[in-house]
Length: 112
Image (cartoon, rainbow, N blue to C red):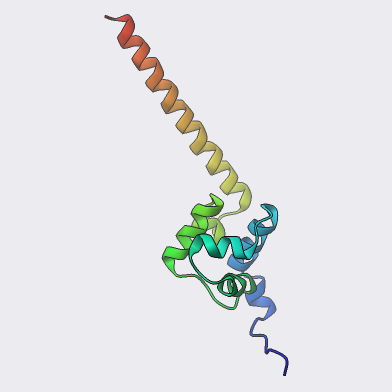
């Protein structure tokens, strides 16, 4: 007997399943690799991709960390472009702070 599919076009095309499939494809990562990282079964990741189930809060955070994206992006509350801009701003802030630290150390050395 063929397996009954629970998904509907609405769930499969919902923001989270769409985002997770896109991230897996874009980064050429298998469901198994993500499942191993999360400590869950590959079938569970498959269900996320199909829109048949959703991760709990902690797993959602781990998925966001794994892909280095925001949970808002995965949930469809922020576009990929917005997420990229936020990541770029974060990187610029990090570089700015590192440079500021370096300059402050240099200034202290010069003032001795």
